Image (cartoon, rainbow, N blue to C red; front, top):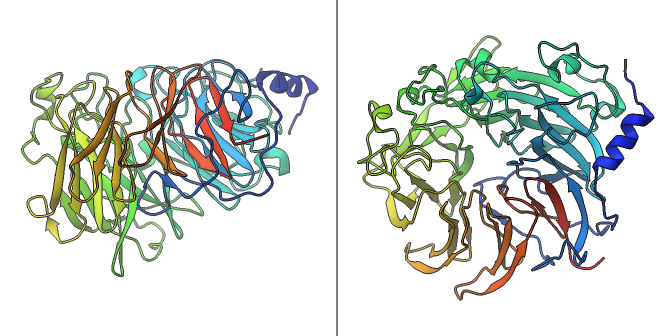
Length: 508
């Protein structure tokens, strides 16, 4: 039974801080996934975007909406709605209190709440399974009226874009239990709840062990969903509890059935976790899925061509692999924990495919490994181990990077965690310019309308001209740390801090 009380409606309204300035009706383009559809490049074709906005004065600010207290999810825009993951420390519904994972669906026009996905935490006995207050950190992927995402408890869900407002659709009917802790009776459902069509529990159904918080940006290819599994170390950071677990899996988009997995034996070589999402590359007529493992190696696999028969889980066929740090340790990796001079490398951001090349940030883990890190560019072709033959250039970073690079008009924009934005020549790997932003960076630079947008953990949004000549356009102080990538859609910038989602656009 569905319940919709006026109390819940009023509380929802009070929780949302809205400046009701409408988004223009002349929409340009949605942004239904993180990065470009193929290649994961952090570049948007949007134009007419502001170089700056003023939250206090309201200049170029369409609206703002309250989030939780920690937000690591990049906003996604599709079908007149905005989706973003956060935590539940500032509840929007009095029936769902305490530490939960939350994914909000907001109206694109004004930021008001349509519905929310609430997911239980699984870290009661081990906080490293599902880190407290981290919330749902995954960006969603939208196709038509279906929303795909991964909860902090490492469950893949397919959601109805309309939520419960149009009924409880699909075979999954246990949304109330899904949203509630195991030791608590579930609440009745209402129009503010997500409508789950199917769910797939990666740890129990694919045989993995997540670490800290599950993270994936799900990749759609026809009837298939490709995603990384977040398989990683346990609470000691020295043991892989599921060494045989897959790092990359393929699910049936319609049902959530497991169709395929890698069999590269990556598990024992994982230094922290498997957080990098896959992308699609195309060379001539050959399409492939590429993926960065928790061992710091980039792999390419043939894409599935047909849905396997029921009960069959296929093994993804590897085309090539490229090790960006071939001299880094590959065996007994836990012995290098906290070693800032020598350790394996890992990859936390996504690799970008562009013009037959892959560019990726790789290096020592920012919490547990060496300080050395690079941006590597290599030819995404060949067979077998191409580590010794495919490298085009290598660029030294000051420190490891959590970010995905943006490549546009012969330039690569990349950020390192020490707070430096790098502009690099895409053909040669030579530095063009750098800028120290003075604070740690976890977000990725995004290029749109001739501008580079990048947020810092000190809560500043920096804007530069996307050009060979360094030109700072703005540095905007916001209310809290920024970990999410800025997104451009429909003539509007969407900027998420830990506490607030801003929609900024020129004029009112």
